Length: 195
Image (cartoon, rainbow, N blue to C red; front, side, top):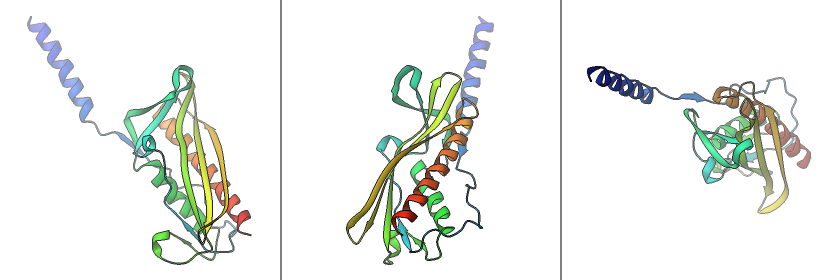
């Protein structure tokens, strides 16, 4: 009996110890921009805060088991983003755009009139497991450019990047790379549209 009580106490202390450990937190890193990147935008632009569906509007690091049920988003328990993905995406997008224009990158709340406003919605931002040991990052984006209350252009696209490992760390790394690739496409599309 004493042995059973000791085992139960050890099991409870192990569970309690695991529940108090802080989760691993991730961001997108320093990004792919360089200061030498040539300016591509010839006019100033406002970048609205990116939006996301309610299920993505939290710091949760989301994954999907495509081999079992791709329609069920799940979240890692012991890993998360330092902020919701849409906020991280917005910060990285603004930072990268600053390197591509001499005119300026603003937020709509700055109250400055700009040539256009870029609005981005993250439709998907998750690690997708095609098999238990194989995963990839999937980022789907919808973007619109507006000016003076009229639509200039809109686009949508998806970016996939393989995860270096089938876990939260691998998913976070792949999602950061996929976000960077999506931002590259957004910058190119924006510059082309505003020529």
